[in-house]
Image (tube, rainbow, N blue to C red):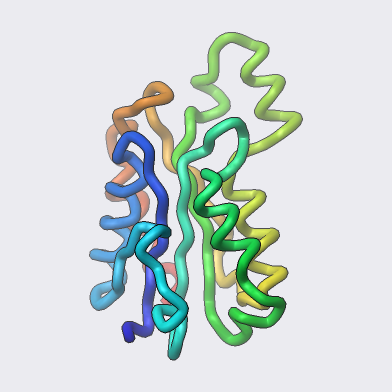
Length: 154
């Protein structure tokens, strides 16, 4: 099994693009959709990224279930980070959506709590990558920004 793993879920393909960019930046990382991850994928792991689109201010149900299914301490000694795709706060319209974001946040916040509960070493701050609308596309420059962010964990 690989020592570096990027697990993601994607609805419209934007989060998948970010996950693949992170995998490229890390070099020899496996990149897997959350529904394809098996317990042996976590064996001998040193670095883990988990990503989801923000849907209703949360990660997707599949990402939530994956993270909730990790036993306490399952990620001890593993450097981890979470990322999401989102409509950036400053681009959110109408004002009601900005208010909701302030109250409920984005998916990354929920994922880092679960990664921490599982014992992961949150080696870098979580990150959100912007989409122009709920279905995308990604905002220009986000792929490059994801690569630059990811290598900070090494």
